[in-house]
Image 1 (tube, one colour):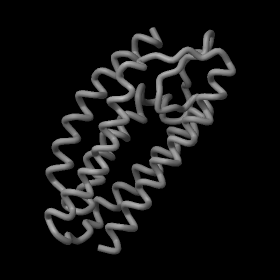
Image 2: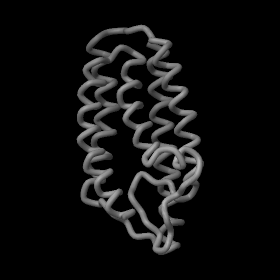
Image 3: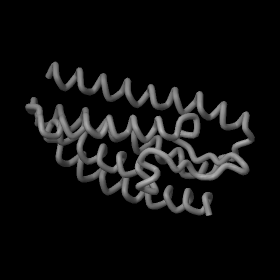
Image 4: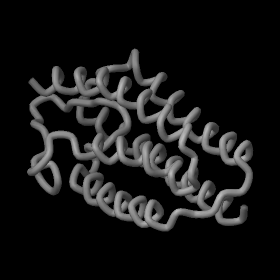
Length: 163
């Protein structure tokens, strides 16, 4: 159980750090005249990710102690490295919300040279892989489906913004 608690604390700290960075970047983006899009679906994204963490906790305790799957732990660490590359490529333009600075085009460096939405690919993988580190199959399946539905809406909005 100690490994689960440490993993969960790391995950929550990581997510809160991302929100802090997003908040700081939002101030910078707004100072540059950025316009926000997709405000109507953003609360659902926050709810989805909050319920995801709650579901991890609930399923873990309902299943009883499960051992770590080191393959999925390694995959999670690799995803974190890919995420770091993607977020650092966006720099101050990265956010959990959709912003567009007037006159600015999409970032085309790092993984964004190769993929249109690398961060969404990472999020899709994280939602599937994080629960599997502790064999939490229900959370992995349910939230992978819910996240796919949410990202369908979000990517549609983002693609419209950048047309």
